[in-house]
Image (cartoon, rainbow, N blue to C red):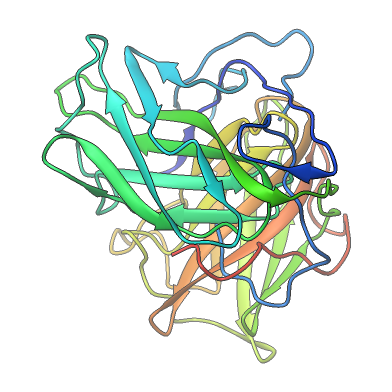
Length: 319
């Protein structure tokens, strides 16, 4: 994953219908969410007039779109489209090229060949996973999703090759079990996770670059010794509410390049592909553990002073 802004959006939004219970074989829709969870350590419909597209660039307006299982001649083949909520399962998938062959060669970016994100449709549950690859190109990782409903799986990778570009492909995942629809968490500028407090300031603006700053503190004191995680002091993923359009951005500067320091502030530059509500997930590492703070923001509004004082990602099994 490249330093600075890295944005991928996906084409096509999928809708689904649920009854009182969500069962194997039913459609994919919003995932259930409880009241704000106490333990958290985790990692949207296209606007009218938008067009399909994807890619990464500087701070120009990113291509807008929805969700795509294929892009640039590559397809995400999710071998495990359904799991049971509350039970650990082995999530398996393959990335295939234009000829249908499993891809077995990747460029390593931020210490990994591939980064896997799993997010619920209500944007409460979030997982940032790092699966292992078998010689035949099949990827696998254990996953335990807490609630029934619809999830989206994002595979973020760059195939091997001189001119290869970074891609993020998406596929739908269903978790069976009793289902209850929930709303997007309310807007917030402060997230509390595992004894840490993270404050968000700045603006996420549609079609225009904006700076987002996140400050980490614990016990009322700034944390000044954040540790690198996957080659950076922080990783930020943004998902648009509705279609889960995906943005992945990295800090303005990397460890050791002289432009960043190990906290408490982590700065990002990001451009929203459209107006709307977004869920931000910040991964940071301290005292040898990775934590995830979550925020709900509205593109076009300054983050400072724009919401409730709480925000979290669901559960502590994202890493």
